[in-house]
Image (tube, rainbow, N blue to C red; front, side, top):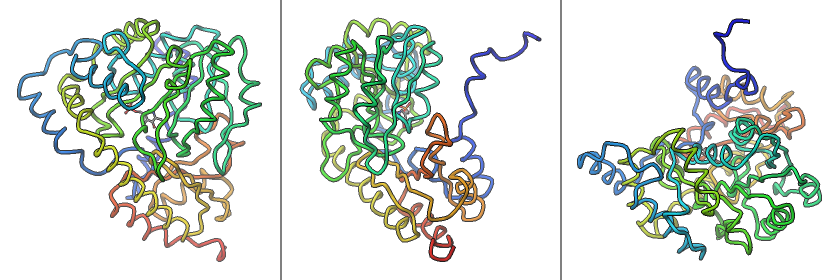
Length: 391
Ligand SMILES: Cc1ncc(COP(=O)(O)O)c(C=O)c1O
């Protein structure tokens, strides 16, 4: 076989369904509710801060682990909100998005042969990140309607081989917000099996109906075995800026920083300056963000329920999973393609968030981080759907 070919590890990964759905959305002129990014403006104050940083010629490499101002803002914000003291110099690593942070965490914390527990349905990167680290992902189900896990099933997934568990709350794709009791079950298992919790909290500020964010690092005994990842992307509607971070005990931070340095050197300097401004804007900004998204959730859910979907109401994040059984298609993928081509609305088939799509409940995921008018236009198009009674 020629050596001019991709490495074998690449063949473990399928092409991203997100890219494909966006390509089809563009091809068919569909309203794109598939990918998770806002189609509205970011706050003016942080855009001004980024422009000012460029004008001040903050255009060269930042310190590899993050600018002092941003690291201190991240540590201060987390400590203040959750009562967990964080030392910026020893515990914070700024990366190119929480995507890079997650990769750096897995590459630095997992050895070949380790197992990492991942809840499914899952955000698409966790499995590949684990595999690239030489570890084996082990999947445990979250089950509709409330996307709860079975504690016995989770307990049985842990063993001496378990090095880590990935938690994502608020959750993509389900919108589930893990309760304190659920996090406590996970925390006890981590402590019993000496495992690390890797907690993706990128939607930490998008919470509905009075819910509060609970980082698993704030549970007793967990700060010393938790890595928390988050970033600017979702809270400040700047997914293209690529600024995220990992907050970890000092014992793990050295490894994360080494890998991050080799992967990307540093996150973009002007956007780090803007990030330091963003994180000190005050809690009203977070409250307004959550209220705005709750109104969008309610708008979209009303539209979908009128068209015959069974919706699983999200408690946070900006996605909504809807059961498509009433429409009588053979699979959710077939229904999602019909929605794009015949109705003009792009979604993600829910089965793509499962390791074995055949065992997934038939759902599609709608993203509602869109202008109200975009959601209403999707509603006008969905009104063309034959509702279950007519099928
Ligand atoms: C659960 C989850 N984690 C991480 C990310 C990526 O975040 P970032 O833009 O910080 O890389 C996303 C983006 O959709 C996500 O849904």
